[in-house]
Length: 494
Ligand code: AMP
Ligand code: MG
Image 1 (tube, helix red, strand yellow):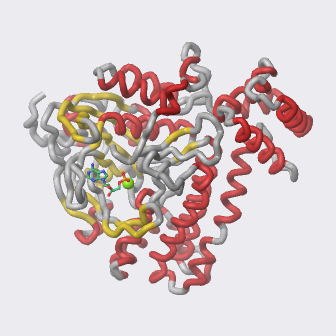
Image 2 (spheres, protein in one colour; image 1 turned 45 degrees about the horizontal axis):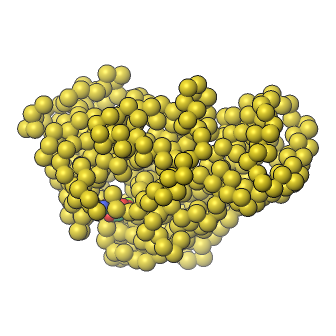
């Protein structure tokens, strides 16, 4: 394929059309610019037909022209590419202006999806960065986006991950990669903080109205907070965020960089960097090698999300009016998060309804798991298998403290006395994934991809898109991590 292909590929050929979206907000919110073509021809590394289908693309959406367009070599006809401006708090400190430093928004489809290229070259918001993303982190983002979706957790999606031999300098020389991401909106808390910090209330209102009208229309007619739509909006964002945190915690997902610029206004998981699914259950686990203070440790995530919501509340204050109202709009987080978490854990336990002692049952097992850092995913899947009539010792064998687990299993059995075993076994298998994107699995796929063998990416994608299925023949992907897994160091550098 020529590096100088023409801009004549039409999105309409794929069955969807561009519609005005974020770009219509005007130049205060973005800079229009084209992606910078890669200096070496791109190739497919992985793609998600599931994401394509959800976006409404035709089944045969992949071809050389689309490859060129999804790597920034060419522009899809009618696309008005842009980089958006935002600010944010990073590691608890106001960081000032940030913005899309390496992501370029191609536009929005009439099926309601914004399409963005991450790693598409420098923008006015790149600061010291080169605007590029490397293959290893792009594969991680691609796989985890689709894995989260497979788990039923709100997330930005990934249509494709592509590679190129163009060199990119990090600690070592690596190669460039582009992830084509899709989401109904990529707006972050930091977009609001940006205009609030500069006291640009008109733009702040324009942005809030845009997001409310499209994604939170019920806030317009809400009678919460005396009909204050902006307070109702804050409350709705807070509740979506609380639900998201409950989902992360229940599957053992650590995000790693929960800065306010990485918080989606739609409550989506966004910006996959040094994330990790827990292997052994360690509540204080820190997955980001750069996070020396443990600000974003696994057990801090629900609190940090709440802290981030305070930043959002502060930013929305000029629209909400009174501080007490803004604070009141965050109040429900304190009940929505624990209730949603308990509901998720109850599902993992196969309990169809709530009982007063459930919290103790949940806390009891988490304490046992933490005591011995038992593998989180394997424990829950074995518990589901046990309920389905599998070998009961497989759960006990995970613990040195046999008396502890036996006592817990007895209370678990007692709680289950009223629930038909077949029903609970089925629901537990649907709530406890067999496959999660463990660091070492991603690492193996990455190392093969660096040798131009992309089969590992495709295999993992298949498992992660339906993580609750058994997938006979892929047991190795569901096993304990090898010893070297704990030596993998993942930081923000990507
Ligand atoms: P992150 O922590 O990855 O969400 O990134 C924080 C900020 O740094 C965002 O404004 C990114 O766009 C920007 N950034 C990260 N890496 C690069 C890069 N290689 N080139 C330009 N900007 C970057
Ligand atoms: Mg980010």
